[in-house]
View 1 (cartoon, rainbow, N blue to C red):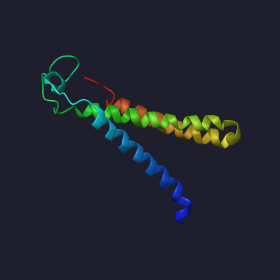
View 2: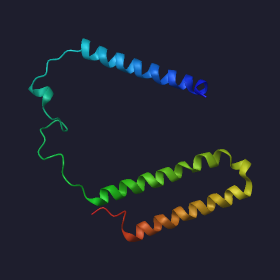
View 3: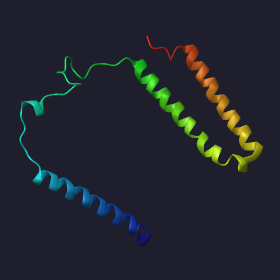
Amino acid sequence: MLGEYLPILIFFAVGFAIAFVLLGLGLIAGSHRPDIEKNAPFECGFPAFEDARINFDVRYYLVAILFIIFDLEIAFLFPWAVVLNKVGIFGIVVMGIFLSILIVGFIYEWKKGALEWE
């Protein structure tokens, strides 16, 4: 059984070896001359005016999660579109049900005000 996984193990070993060698070469050959400007926090070209660890509004995270969910669900449409002529009417009906559930969820979130940014 180990023989089946040996190529994968060798692949990972070579990958880690190359990564460590390149990191080591960068540490050895790189210049180490820090100054005030290199160590200063950089935020859009001007000094930071606030602490970076402020609380964000939960709506920001909600919109981000909704975007990820709908983006991933739309990604399911691409494989379906590729095999559309092979799945027949059953595939079309199933995708219609899937898209109907998406639309109902989107309308629910819209009515609840989850997409409002005030």
